[in-house]
Amino acid sequence: MDNGSILILLVTGSTRSMSSNTGALRTAEAVAPEGVRTELVDALAELPVFDPDQDTDPLPAPVARLRARIAAADAVLFSAPEYAGTLPGAFKNLLDWTVGGSEMYRKPVAWLNVAPPGRGDGATATLATVLGYLGTVVLESSCVRLPLSSAGLGPEGTATDPEFRAALGDVLRTVRAELLELPPPG
Image (cartoon, rainbow, N blue to C red):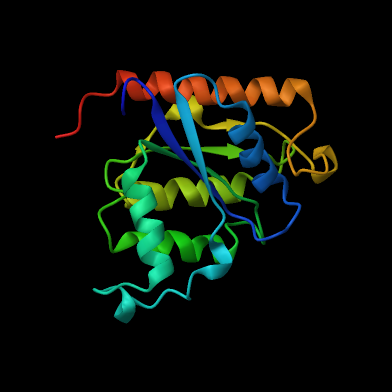
């Protein structure tokens, strides 16, 4: 954190062009409050299929970029759809590439579930399991369900509902507040 400003890396778990998950994170960029900087990672399609034999120096370039961005962030906010009751394969692939590095260890994380009530819980549960395995610090108060359908996205791919936008700004403020309460790393 520099001068009280935090960097939240926004990681989408969808490859769809008008994904409500990506739209929620684009909206987070647009509504980031004072003291919060955001950076969207929309890199699922460029990552190679995880291969433990390639998880060595030098890393594949897209993986090295991903890990550097994670390392530079103060926190990571995920938003991923659910496919067949769990995380989509491309998003799990991204997470698999983080296992061999240390960038996620003790990294503060949170997630948005933008699915309507009764949906998306399998993906959230799997994400919580993987993030626990990685040794992240889950910012519990910042892990929320904020339903958003792709029909709620405007032409620029961000949410148009003022209540959703306000609630998402509150999530980012909560991430910042939780980060400031954490003991210093070390």
